[in-house]
Image (cartoon, rainbow, N blue to C red):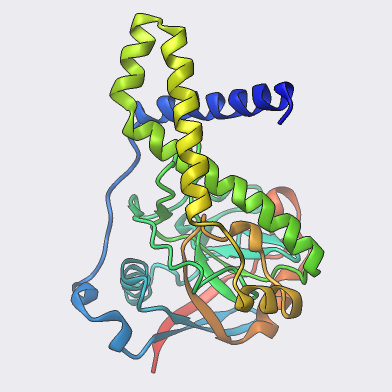
Length: 293
Protein backbone atom coordinates (compact mmCIF):
# COMPACT_ATOMS: atom_id res chain seq x y z
CA UNK A 1 0.00 0.00 0.00
CA UNK A 2 1.32 3.45 -0.91
CA UNK A 3 2.24 5.86 1.89
CA UNK A 4 -0.43 8.35 0.77
CA UNK A 5 -3.06 5.59 0.83
CA UNK A 6 -2.08 4.68 4.39
CA UNK A 7 -2.35 8.33 5.41
CA UNK A 8 -5.79 8.69 3.84
CA UNK A 9 -6.97 5.52 5.52
CA UNK A 10 -5.76 6.69 8.93
CA UNK A 11 -7.40 10.07 8.46
CA UNK A 12 -10.64 8.35 7.50
CA UNK A 13 -10.68 6.23 10.66
CA UNK A 14 -9.60 9.20 12.78
CA UNK A 15 -12.63 11.15 11.58
CA UNK A 16 -14.85 8.23 12.58
CA UNK A 17 -13.19 8.15 15.99
CA UNK A 18 -13.86 11.83 16.61
CA UNK A 19 -17.47 11.56 15.46
CA UNK A 20 -18.01 8.55 17.71
CA UNK A 21 -16.59 10.44 20.70
CA UNK A 22 -19.00 13.29 20.04
CA UNK A 23 -21.92 10.91 19.78
CA UNK A 24 -21.09 9.28 23.10
CA UNK A 25 -21.71 12.60 24.84
CA UNK A 26 -25.22 12.80 23.39
CA UNK A 27 -28.16 10.92 24.84
CA UNK A 28 -30.55 9.23 22.43
CA UNK A 29 -34.25 8.70 23.07
CA UNK A 30 -34.13 5.18 24.46
CA UNK A 31 -37.74 4.67 25.44
CA UNK A 32 -39.37 1.68 23.86
CA UNK A 33 -42.83 0.21 23.63
CA UNK A 34 -44.05 -3.36 23.20
CA UNK A 35 -47.18 -5.25 24.22
CA UNK A 36 -47.68 -8.32 26.41
CA UNK A 37 -47.33 -10.47 23.30
CA UNK A 38 -43.55 -10.01 23.58
CA UNK A 39 -43.13 -13.27 25.49
CA UNK A 40 -44.43 -15.43 22.64
CA UNK A 41 -42.05 -17.78 20.87
CA UNK A 42 -41.39 -16.08 17.54
CA UNK A 43 -40.62 -18.96 15.22
CA UNK A 44 -43.57 -21.11 16.29
CA UNK A 45 -46.27 -18.51 15.68
CA UNK A 46 -48.40 -17.79 12.70
CA UNK A 47 -47.40 -14.42 11.28
CA UNK A 48 -49.78 -11.51 11.86
CA UNK A 49 -51.25 -9.82 8.81
CA UNK A 50 -52.33 -6.19 8.68
CA UNK A 51 -54.50 -4.67 5.98
CA UNK A 52 -53.82 -1.04 5.10
CA UNK A 53 -56.89 0.38 3.40
CA UNK A 54 -55.54 3.34 1.44
CA UNK A 55 -57.23 5.94 -0.72
CA UNK A 56 -55.80 4.12 -3.77
CA UNK A 57 -56.58 0.53 -2.72
CA UNK A 58 -55.66 -2.07 -0.13
CA UNK A 59 -52.22 -3.34 0.88
CA UNK A 60 -51.75 -6.39 3.12
CA UNK A 61 -48.48 -6.77 5.04
CA UNK A 62 -47.22 -9.72 7.05
CA UNK A 63 -45.23 -9.03 10.24
CA UNK A 64 -42.17 -11.14 11.07
CA UNK A 65 -42.12 -12.89 14.44
CA UNK A 66 -38.32 -12.60 14.58
CA UNK A 67 -38.72 -8.84 15.14
CA UNK A 68 -41.10 -9.01 18.15
CA UNK A 69 -40.68 -5.43 19.39
CA UNK A 70 -41.52 -3.97 16.00
CA UNK A 71 -44.33 -6.49 15.44
CA UNK A 72 -45.98 -5.81 18.80
CA UNK A 73 -45.61 -2.05 18.49
CA UNK A 74 -47.13 -2.08 15.01
CA UNK A 75 -50.06 -4.20 16.21
CA UNK A 76 -50.64 -1.84 19.14
CA UNK A 77 -50.69 1.22 16.88
CA UNK A 78 -53.07 -0.48 14.46
CA UNK A 79 -55.42 -1.52 17.26
CA UNK A 80 -55.49 1.98 18.77
CA UNK A 81 -56.20 3.63 15.41
CA UNK A 82 -52.91 5.53 15.26
CA UNK A 83 -52.48 4.89 11.53
CA UNK A 84 -56.05 5.73 10.54
CA UNK A 85 -55.88 8.89 8.44
CA UNK A 86 -52.10 9.29 8.15
CA UNK A 87 -50.64 10.38 4.82
CA UNK A 88 -47.97 8.80 2.67
CA UNK A 89 -45.88 11.90 3.26
CA UNK A 90 -42.67 10.87 1.46
CA UNK A 91 -42.74 9.04 -1.87
CA UNK A 92 -39.71 8.44 -4.09
CA UNK A 93 -40.17 6.42 -7.26
CA UNK A 94 -37.93 3.36 -7.57
CA UNK A 95 -37.02 3.70 -3.90
CA UNK A 96 -39.83 3.57 -1.32
CA UNK A 97 -43.11 4.99 0.01
CA UNK A 98 -43.15 6.25 3.61
CA UNK A 99 -45.97 6.89 6.08
CA UNK A 100 -46.77 6.79 9.80
CA UNK A 101 -46.33 10.47 10.78
CA UNK A 102 -49.18 11.11 13.22
CA UNK A 103 -49.01 14.84 12.50
CA UNK A 104 -49.96 14.24 8.87
CA UNK A 105 -53.62 13.45 9.59
CA UNK A 106 -54.63 17.11 9.58
CA UNK A 107 -51.64 18.59 7.76
CA UNK A 108 -52.20 21.40 5.28
CA UNK A 109 -50.62 21.27 1.81
CA UNK A 110 -47.60 23.33 2.85
CA UNK A 111 -47.01 21.67 6.22
CA UNK A 112 -43.60 20.07 6.67
CA UNK A 113 -43.88 16.42 7.67
CA UNK A 114 -41.59 13.64 8.81
CA UNK A 115 -41.09 14.41 12.51
CA UNK A 116 -44.34 13.06 13.92
CA UNK A 117 -44.17 9.96 16.15
CA UNK A 118 -45.58 8.63 19.45
CA UNK A 119 -42.65 10.00 21.44
CA UNK A 120 -40.47 6.92 21.70
CA UNK A 121 -38.10 4.80 19.62
CA UNK A 122 -37.64 1.05 19.28
CA UNK A 123 -34.44 -0.93 19.64
CA UNK A 124 -33.06 -2.10 16.29
CA UNK A 125 -33.89 -5.72 15.41
CA UNK A 126 -31.72 -6.66 12.45
CA UNK A 127 -32.43 -10.20 11.23
CA UNK A 128 -29.92 -10.00 8.43
CA UNK A 129 -29.32 -11.49 5.92
CA UNK A 130 -32.56 -13.49 6.30
CA UNK A 131 -34.64 -10.34 5.97
CA UNK A 132 -33.41 -7.67 3.59
CA UNK A 133 -34.60 -4.75 1.47
CA UNK A 134 -36.15 -6.61 -1.43
CA UNK A 135 -39.11 -5.12 -3.30
CA UNK A 136 -42.12 -5.19 -0.97
CA UNK A 137 -40.12 -5.21 2.26
CA UNK A 138 -41.69 -3.39 5.23
CA UNK A 139 -39.10 -1.50 7.27
CA UNK A 140 -38.92 1.06 10.06
CA UNK A 141 -37.84 4.62 9.37
CA UNK A 142 -35.36 6.28 11.73
CA UNK A 143 -33.16 9.30 12.24
CA UNK A 144 -29.60 9.27 10.88
CA UNK A 145 -26.49 7.73 12.39
CA UNK A 146 -25.14 11.14 13.41
CA UNK A 147 -27.82 11.51 16.09
CA UNK A 148 -28.85 7.86 16.34
CA UNK A 149 -25.75 5.62 16.35
CA UNK A 150 -27.74 2.70 17.77
CA UNK A 151 -30.04 2.89 14.72
CA UNK A 152 -33.17 2.79 16.83
CA UNK A 153 -36.39 2.83 14.84
CA UNK A 154 -39.10 5.47 14.81
CA UNK A 155 -42.01 4.56 17.07
CA UNK A 156 -44.47 4.75 14.18
CA UNK A 157 -43.01 5.71 10.81
CA UNK A 158 -42.35 2.96 8.29
CA UNK A 159 -41.73 2.50 4.60
CA UNK A 160 -42.42 -0.07 1.91
CA UNK A 161 -39.59 -0.76 -0.53
CA UNK A 162 -40.15 -0.44 -4.26
CA UNK A 163 -36.53 -0.09 -5.38
CA UNK A 164 -35.09 -1.05 -8.72
CA UNK A 165 -33.51 -4.05 -10.43
CA UNK A 166 -29.70 -4.24 -10.30
CA UNK A 167 -27.20 -5.98 -12.51
CA UNK A 168 -24.65 -8.39 -11.05
CA UNK A 169 -21.87 -5.84 -11.62
CA UNK A 170 -23.83 -3.14 -9.79
CA UNK A 171 -24.41 -5.48 -6.86
CA UNK A 172 -20.69 -6.27 -6.68
CA UNK A 173 -19.84 -2.56 -6.42
CA UNK A 174 -22.54 -2.10 -3.79
CA UNK A 175 -21.22 -5.10 -1.90
CA UNK A 176 -17.80 -3.43 -1.74
CA UNK A 177 -19.39 -0.27 -0.33
CA UNK A 178 -21.27 -2.28 2.29
CA UNK A 179 -17.99 -3.90 3.33
CA UNK A 180 -16.70 -0.41 4.11
CA UNK A 181 -19.88 0.39 6.05
CA UNK A 182 -19.34 -2.75 8.12
CA UNK A 183 -15.76 -1.70 8.87
CA UNK A 184 -17.01 1.71 10.00
CA UNK A 185 -19.48 0.02 12.34
CA UNK A 186 -16.75 -2.19 13.82
CA UNK A 187 -14.43 0.78 14.28
CA UNK A 188 -17.13 2.84 15.99
CA UNK A 189 -17.81 -0.03 18.39
CA UNK A 190 -14.12 -0.33 19.23
CA UNK A 191 -13.96 3.41 19.85
CA UNK A 192 -16.88 3.10 22.25
CA UNK A 193 -15.16 0.25 24.05
CA UNK A 194 -11.99 2.34 24.42
CA UNK A 195 -13.78 5.54 25.37
CA UNK A 196 -12.07 6.01 28.75
CA UNK A 197 -8.63 5.34 27.29
CA UNK A 198 -9.19 7.81 24.48
CA UNK A 199 -10.38 10.52 26.86
CA UNK A 200 -7.25 10.10 28.97
CA UNK A 201 -5.03 10.49 25.91
CA UNK A 202 -6.95 13.56 24.81
CA UNK A 203 -6.54 15.18 28.23
CA UNK A 204 -2.83 14.42 28.30
CA UNK A 205 -2.47 15.53 24.66
CA UNK A 206 -0.28 12.51 24.00
CA UNK A 207 -0.42 12.54 20.20
CA UNK A 208 2.00 9.64 19.77
CA UNK A 209 -0.07 7.39 22.03
CA UNK A 210 -3.27 8.51 20.29
CA UNK A 211 -1.75 7.62 16.90
CA UNK A 212 -0.64 4.24 18.24
CA UNK A 213 -4.14 3.54 19.57
CA UNK A 214 -5.68 4.58 16.29
CA UNK A 215 -3.40 2.16 14.41
CA UNK A 216 -4.25 -0.58 16.90
CA UNK A 217 -8.00 -0.07 16.40
CA UNK A 218 -7.57 -0.04 12.61
CA UNK A 219 -5.75 -3.37 12.79
CA UNK A 220 -8.46 -4.83 15.03
CA UNK A 221 -11.12 -3.57 12.62
CA UNK A 222 -9.45 -5.16 9.61
CA UNK A 223 -8.91 -8.45 11.46
CA UNK A 224 -12.52 -8.67 12.65
CA UNK A 225 -13.89 -7.78 9.23
CA UNK A 226 -11.71 -10.47 7.67
CA UNK A 227 -13.06 -13.09 10.09
CA UNK A 228 -16.64 -12.30 9.10
CA UNK A 229 -16.47 -11.10 5.49
CA UNK A 230 -19.59 -9.44 4.11
CA UNK A 231 -21.09 -11.15 1.09
CA UNK A 232 -24.58 -11.05 -0.31
CA UNK A 233 -26.44 -14.34 -0.13
CA UNK A 234 -27.72 -16.15 -3.21
CA UNK A 235 -31.26 -15.20 -2.13
CA UNK A 236 -30.34 -11.50 -2.03
CA UNK A 237 -28.62 -11.61 -5.42
CA UNK A 238 -31.57 -13.45 -6.96
CA UNK A 239 -34.08 -10.95 -5.54
CA UNK A 240 -32.12 -7.81 -6.41
CA UNK A 241 -31.46 -8.97 -9.98
CA UNK A 242 -35.05 -10.12 -10.60
CA UNK A 243 -37.66 -8.16 -8.61
CA UNK A 244 -35.35 -5.44 -7.29
CA UNK A 245 -35.05 -3.56 -4.02
CA UNK A 246 -32.74 -1.18 -2.14
CA UNK A 247 -29.66 -3.21 -1.15
CA UNK A 248 -27.72 -0.17 0.13
CA UNK A 249 -30.09 -0.04 3.14
CA UNK A 250 -29.40 -3.60 4.25
CA UNK A 251 -28.24 -4.02 7.83
CA UNK A 252 -28.96 -0.35 8.63
CA UNK A 253 -32.75 -0.24 9.00
CA UNK A 254 -34.95 -2.86 10.66
CA UNK A 255 -36.95 -4.92 8.16
CA UNK A 256 -39.92 -6.29 10.10
CA UNK A 257 -42.37 -7.54 7.47
CA UNK A 258 -43.31 -7.63 3.82
CA UNK A 259 -46.22 -6.97 1.46
CA UNK A 260 -48.16 -10.13 0.62
CA UNK A 261 -51.00 -8.47 -1.30
CA UNK A 262 -51.37 -5.13 -3.03
CA UNK A 263 -48.00 -4.32 -4.60
CA UNK A 264 -50.02 -2.90 -7.49
CA UNK A 265 -51.36 -0.33 -5.02
CA UNK A 266 -47.82 0.36 -3.78
CA UNK A 267 -46.83 1.03 -7.40
CA UNK A 268 -49.78 3.40 -7.84
CA UNK A 269 -48.54 5.34 -4.85
CA UNK A 270 -44.91 5.43 -5.98
CA UNK A 271 -45.93 6.66 -9.43
CA UNK A 272 -47.91 9.62 -8.10
CA UNK A 273 -46.75 13.19 -8.74
CA UNK A 274 -44.75 14.63 -5.86
CA UNK A 275 -43.70 18.13 -4.87
CA UNK A 276 -41.62 19.68 -2.10
CA UNK A 277 -39.97 17.20 0.30
CA UNK A 278 -41.17 14.31 -1.94
CA UNK A 279 -44.74 14.71 -0.68
CA UNK A 280 -47.50 13.71 -3.12
CA UNK A 281 -49.24 16.76 -4.57
CA UNK A 282 -52.59 15.03 -4.02
CA UNK A 283 -52.97 13.52 -0.55
CA UNK A 284 -52.80 9.73 -0.36
CA UNK A 285 -53.63 8.36 3.06
CA UNK A 286 -54.22 5.20 5.05
CA UNK A 287 -57.98 5.34 5.56
CA UNK A 288 -58.04 2.40 7.99
CA UNK A 289 -55.51 -0.14 9.28
CA UNK A 290 -56.83 -3.42 10.66
CA UNK A 291 -55.55 -6.82 11.79
CA UNK A 292 -56.62 -9.61 9.44
CA UNK A 293 -56.44 -13.38 9.86
